[in-house]
Length: 369
Image (tube, rainbow, N blue to C red; front, side, top):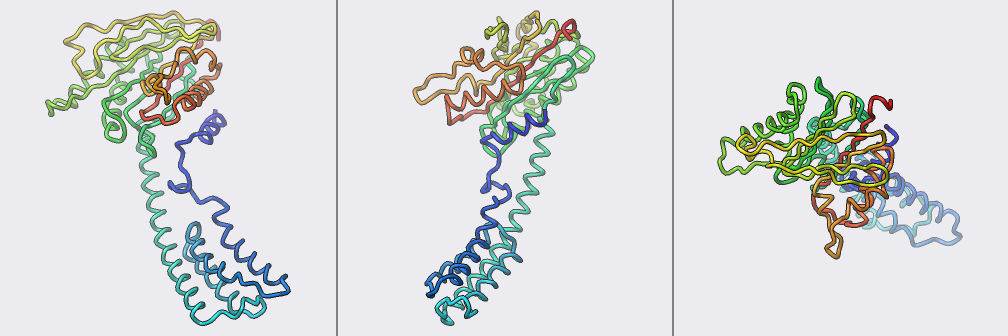
């Protein structure tokens, strides 16, 4: 599983690049030294002096991109030495040229110091943010009870790990339970609501006997959170799944969101799940959520996707045809299935603007284990 996650990380277009906080690439660290060595070598092997001393002036600024102040100072000093040592035949630079190079080197050392301090602060802040966000939405394990699972999340706000979508899979005394939903809004402003809902779900999964009661608990959580602000209009859509202890039946409750697709025998079947009122709008005063029970067989997979998938459009305005594409992308491994759908979605709509969430659940009935 770790190798699969590593493969996902390498292919993830949302991962940090050099200019977004990642360590500088090797070429950026090697370039100043390589340029210095190249100029020296060219002068030593050339029978006539070469007018390439101006290239040495670029070495200290280049060092700022990837080196700390000490290494930048060393490279600046070497540049001055190379300019003044007669063996390199650099056309005897005047005092003005040397003073210019010295000034650029000192300035580069100062800039390198400032950049190093800034980068250290950014790394600390990002590490704290990642730990906090992973505490809200941790990585799913490969298996929860008799259910293999995989989740894929791409936040609409680049550089964040959590937005307005959420999912979780938990085992409890009443079996394995899963949730996937979407809160009002997206980005960092929705993280507090996501954290509140996931906390309520994890608690309800332990002490509520049926998925309708779990949905009611989530609805109450949002109602309590928005009680102090009558204009908050805080709501969320969600799908709750409750697997029996032997994983041969799943019970589904949909609150303002479509149910999962069932992958079976090479086909993607849309389950007849009627969405009820979204969470936060008062389930207690509305009709009781409709509970749908679905028998499961060996090899079945349940695929849940947020509206960031189903409402993604290509340049011509055509929605992504998830139900049509899913059978051709099917894989026994849940992680591979989610990865294939994500790659296909990006080909269909390269500029995805909404949070994208996928949850793949592959139950293994007890008599097939």
